[in-house]
Image 1: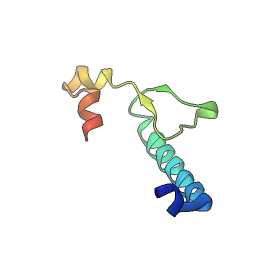
Image 2 (image 1 turned 90 degrees about the horizontal axis):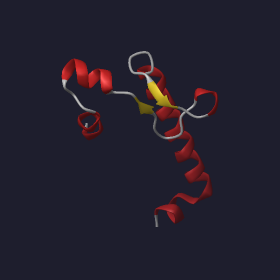
Image 3 (image 1 turned 180 degrees about the vertical axis):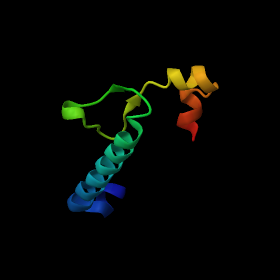
Image 4 (image 1 turned 45 degrees about the horizontal axis):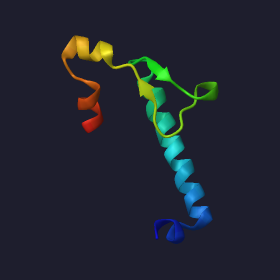
Length: 69
């Protein structure tokens, strides 16, 4: 139903917005958390993989804790 209601143009716009948002967040966090994987030319798709092991060592906050928030 969602796909039908959105239509091709709506799905394209939603995808563009999701990619833009993901890359904005990834670029903002990159100086603070090492990135384990990014796509071609340093772009992310809808999520990035950060190395949060240093965060866990320093604070005890795990990747699971971050994911839950």
